[in-house]
Amino acid sequence: MKPGSSVDDLGVFFEGWHAEVATRAAAVAGDWAVDLDADDRARTHEAAQALAAAGLLAYCVPQRFGGAAVGRPDGVDARALTLIREALGWADGLLDTAFAMQGLGSHPITLAGSEAQKARYLPGVMAGARLGAFCLTEPEAGSDVASMRCRARRDGDRYVIDGEKAWISNAGVAGQYVVFATVDPAAGRRGITAFVVEPDDPGLTVEPMEVIAPHPIGRLRFAGCAIPVERRLGAEGAGFKLAMRTLDVFRTTVGGAALGMARRALDEGLARALGRVQFGEPIFEQQQIAAYLAESATELDAARLLVFRAAHLRDTADRRVSTEVAMGKLFATEAAQRIIDRAVQIHGGLGVTRGSAVERLYREIRALRIYEGTSEIQRVVIAAGLKAGRG
Ligand SMILES: Cc1cc2nc3c(=O)[nH]c(=O)nc-3n(C[C@H](O)[C@H](O)[C@H](O)COP(=O)(O)OP(=O)(O)OC[C@H]3O[C@@H](n4cnc5c(N)ncnc54)[C@H](O)[C@@H]3O)c2cc1C
Image (cartoon, rainbow, N blue to C red):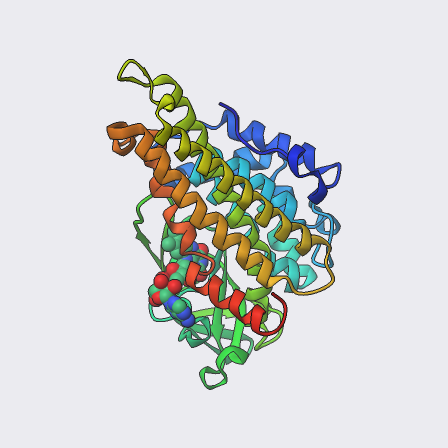
């Protein structure tokens, strides 16, 4: 079985150099061994090192700032990032998360950082030495981002941050936290401002959380956390737009991770159906089992078309593509859940036995329908696009 990341069948969406990116990502995915008993945080550092050594983290940073990414004014290429996540998602959700967070946790710096901020943070991101984090969600502000309460007050040449963030990937391992806080709660989204907080800043504490699949995640508490004014990213009030511009790129790549996980489930399901004999023949010969596989293969191809259409438009179209991006994320993550569920069913008891690949995928896929905008929020975005005539 090989990581299913290829550009061959979707050439219309790609340029020549994408094939090499897919091949390189597939090599890392093929060499990576899942270890369910290892510590998530130690494993995340190992993953970042492997991704850096293969040159994949360089695609998180534009060429003009020392990386490998070429493209839009913001310089990252959504197709390359999505292809990489497709290959990594096939291998291991933790490996995929390690890659995604280097992008998500650095893109606001790429977009809005000063030269000094870029020089301080981006080289470490590419080397896998500084792990990234993107801190938007709060206990009382999830889908409704603009209702955030985390507060930043200007005090001379510092900002003082108070509040809490929750479900933050890489909490406790990150070397830099891009934190969104409001400088004016009455201003709603226009008060939201981005800052870079470092792990040893006084007043920051981290508490780990546990989710259903291996994933370094936790809560951040800010109690009078004072940081220099130079750590503000962009202007006061520009944080909401910055977060949304970042999500426009990375939502597409979540679809890529879902494709990889779904492809792995299809591979595992097919192998089991061909090898498992019941009633004197492989269960593949049972029409119901063959039909499960046929449906999964069709849904996977449909998902790939939507995800790579979104990535291609994001890289090439001269307009907002939030609707197409939302369609790709919604369809791919929901389809992947169904494809993985069918693979579990094909495995019978083995499918729910801890340690089997499909059991792990069943837990790994679930969060992708929730983070970076739930499926319901993607439908809200698509419906808004329809109303505005962009359907
Ligand atoms: C594994 C994992 C990793 C994460 N990593 C990060 C991270 O690194 N950084 C970060 O900032 N956040 C992160 N998150 C948080 C994630 O982005 C939020 O969980 C998500 O945005 C949903 O917010 P919530 O959990 O508060 O749910 P809520 O907003 O409370 O939503 C609960 C339910 O109500 C629905 N709902 C809410 N509003 C509407 C609406 N207008 N229309 C229809 N339905 C609606 C939702 O779709 C959902 O089904 C992570 C979450 C997980 C699970």
